[in-house]
Image (spheres, rainbow, N blue to C red):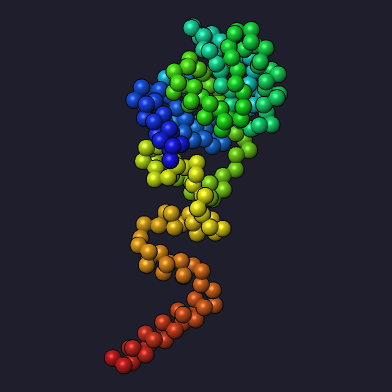
Length: 221
């Protein structure tokens, strides 16, 4: 569980120091370590988060990054999350010369990787900024959504490293997800599971038998 310990350490230290960190994302925006959700593209600094007004990845240009170049003292590194991997090369051509001119290091990658990079550099005390554009192509499956529920807890309270969830699952991902969320005991779980797996015809026969038994009981009493 070394990874979990490291994640817990980073999040705790960053929250205590009121440093900015990101713990989740979707095509709509970003969830910060302190629980806030920010919609749309964002600009991050060690202790500040701002809305970044770019409508599409085509708007990621030297002009839209001028904020990062205008800071005094200048940031050492800009971590640029350009949404999806397919956008990286095109955006790099547009912005790399501008950042080089202003002597700002550039780390450009898909936004999911950019979040991890920014969190790490910020926790290490680097004077870093991040420009994060939400991924357009992020499709969340039922299984991934279930895993995301665990991330709504604090990093320090999760029972299992969220990056390792699923390693012990069965081939039935839906059943694994429901069981993980189940709040009852083992007996009630097995009963509910059996009802779900039951053949519809068998279920109808069982219900009909229950009705007949109830009618017989009424006649006897």
